[in-house]
Amino acid sequence: MNKIHGNLVNGEWIQSGDIRPNINPSDLSDVIGEYVHAGVAQVDQAVQAASVAQSKWARAGAGLRADVLERIGIELIQRSEELGRMLAREEGKTLKEAQAEAQRAGQLFKFFAGEALRLTGESLAPLREGVDVEVLRTPVGVVGLITPWNFPLGIPAWKIAPALAFGNSVVFKPAELVPASAWALAEIIHRSGIPAGVFNMVVGGPDVGVALTTHPRLNAVSFTGSVHVGEKIAQAVMGRGVSLQLELGGKNALLVMDDARLDVAVEAALNGSFMSCGQRCTASSRLIVSSGIHDAFVEGLTNRIRSLKIGNALEAGVDLGPMASEFQLANSVKYVEIGQSEGAELLAGGSRLERATRGYYFSPALFVETNNAMRINREEIFGPVASVIRVADLDEALAVANDSDFGLSAGIITTNPHTAAEFKRGCEAGMLSVNLPTAGMDFHAPMTGRKRSSFGPPEKGTYARDFYTAIKVVHQQWT
Image 1: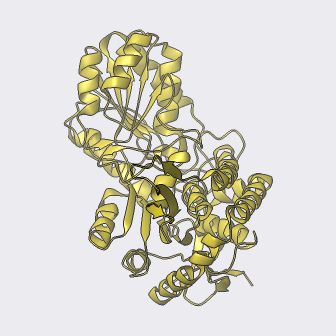
Image 2: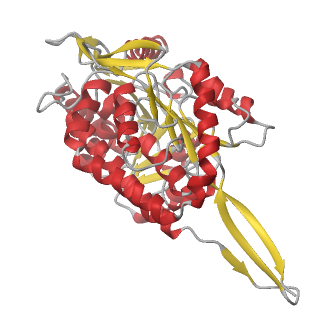
Image 3: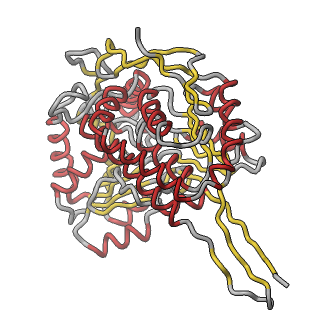
């Protein structure tokens, strides 16, 4: 009999609820496991448990919190090959990418183990004789963390680790599509020595998300996902004194200038646009290319796209696995049809593929002769569909790049430092790259965006404390 994987509430694995199979997108006949989807009542139990446990966890001391996070990080790194294989099987990214993500998740926990020890306050110079002023950082309380399916270990790690490091308790709601990764992470955390109720996990759909974000005992919500859901969460928590952090995606631009090295430009575009099947919020979906290099760039990128090996995510030598779900596959097909209807020229890919095992395979699509008014250049596709926009110079490239509702990431390929400096000054995005893909960040650096891409303090790095702690100012006099 298959093991039933339950939800973690107040230190206990709860197996009551709707049991659903988890299917491998590389091989639809492969059932990874059976996972319990929580109901609204379990959400209430989890938040109540987190509320009771939080103050004790905060008082336990930074040393204990650091030790717990260090143990979690060490186990994630030691088991990264095994966990990466499970992740690739569940989500569809290649084994190499998946194992790197498991490693990164472990590094994030280890980083925040150190941050737990480095959290400091501040003493201000007194203005009144005998009156001392302290600025303290204290936990915000019970934090609800809602994460997407595309980085099922990495994104939970960069939310859970700082929340726990700074003395908060957590109710974690992972995406329904990736319960195996979430369960594996929760099981490691559960065995780390963390007190019951400090960390809780409830897998479920929109009803679970609503129950979590509207719970009266919740103090903060951090969400990564779609604009549509993020706006609903914002409406639910605003006016209730709940701290909010949203990461809502992008429509990211890679600028390729005439002086760029062609090989660097092609590889940066290939990686940023198509690796992980373009299912990254920082993926380059708009390739803004100056006219002098346009034709050579398009030819080079088209040849590289056609050379990609697409297949089962666990197979050696595979460059791209399947899309993560039937919905993601259908959505990419839909946008290829939209691009063609708008008059864009489909130069490569854009169709479903068949492989030895039945799965959600798709050939990366490249459009040329597009303009920034087209839907394929305005709307987030979240798939391996990229468009080339021809421009005259840097000024036009920046104007096109900034003409977007989003402002998450952007990049430029150039050999001129002055051009790069102008790009860094003028580009309206939170994360910039020079001669690198737009997707891919160092784990200790903050993640932030502008416009509709982000709301609230940055994630990751030392900046994470700004969301997971609250400022308390103390004036005191001793007579």
